[in-house]
Image (cartoon, rainbow, N blue to C red; front, side, top):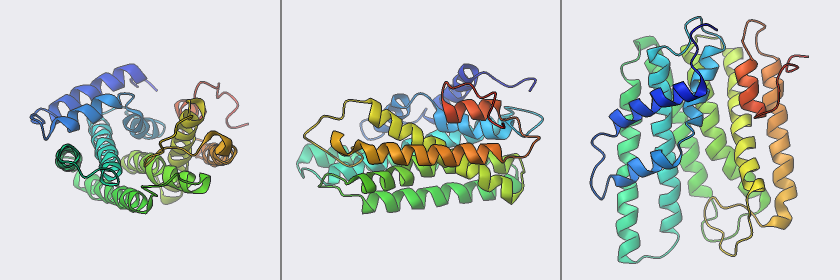
Length: 274
């Protein structure tokens, strides 16, 4: 599509908008808001919003999409801080931990507000469903974090459920927002949602499986031990299959190349519809 940004150019534009949104995040208690955004600098969920929209729309990467992508990254930061906060609450009750937890709570509230505020200038017909999507994602993630085994090693099934309810919920939400702004029908929106969830869960589990998981301390969000990775691999393959099938069944007018690359990573996608 003519005018579509490269991943690097889109990331730079999202970064610029994030910097504006974080202008007032200063001082000890708001510093974590900036830190968590910088730590997760691939802008993956913001990119997913844009890739879904661009696969359908005639005017790729317009200002409304970059705004929505920025909001998704702010929301991602909020969710990450909430995850870190619950992990700390399961640990020591020392003054330093309490102070750090207070900072994480305030900074996450800041990012939560910033995400919704960033969406607010969208057209009336778009802003309500997009805000509703963020609210649904937030509810799913908070439920997942609340139910997570904070003080014990998660079983493989528990960890797969945790990833579904965090990375999967974020990926689904990002895809639904992109599809909503592209004004697709409900059936296509559900396919995009499945794609976003599956690709995001698969990527999170791949990162876990590729990393050195040999550790004696398993905290909230940490993977099961090495001997249990078979179940994680099976779950990653299952979610990849779902995402790939959703990709294949999208409308024939949908440009699937960039989305295919997102799902498959570096794998060529010429045969995605064969």
